Structure formats: structure tokens, C-alpha cells
Amino acid sequence: MKTTLDISDPLLDQVRRIAVRDGDTLRSLVEQGLRKVVAERSAKAKPFKLRDGSVHGQGVQPEFENATWEQWRDLIYEGRGS
Image (cartoon, rainbow, N blue to C red; front, side):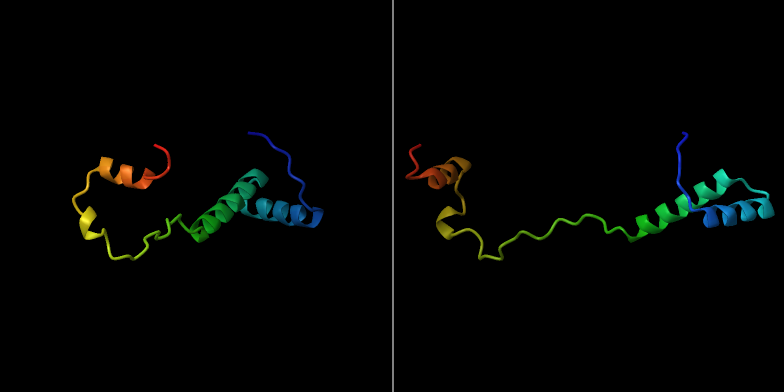
């Protein structure tokens, strides 16, 4: 893929000298630099971790231990018109 980069003249001069010295191309050095930055920043990125949303309660009240989903639903909606 072709793209245009705006690189400062002093930096571009340095890169060109390094490319000539090492028998490399400007394109190759730019790609190497970008790969290095991507690798470094990827290593720093924290993986997503879902926070603990538990409430640390005492569990279900004894009278609801064996309740069915329908009983739970009826309790949740009790007094709400349904």
C-alpha cells in the first residue's frame, strides 16, 4: 500500500545515510521502525479484564432456595401491574 509521510528533513537525512550504510532501503527502515513501535505498544497494552461485580452477600434467603424462575419473576414484578 502506498502512503505519504511527512518526515522532518534532519531525520530523513539520517535515515537515508543509515540505509545506504547498511545496504537497506528507506521503505525497509520505516517498516522496521513501525513494527518495533507496534510490538512495544502491544506489549504494554493491558488485556481487558471484567471487574468483579459480585455483591458479597449471604446468598439466597432460605425461603427462595428452591424457587423456580416463574416464582422469582412473580416476586420481582409483584405490585408493578403485571
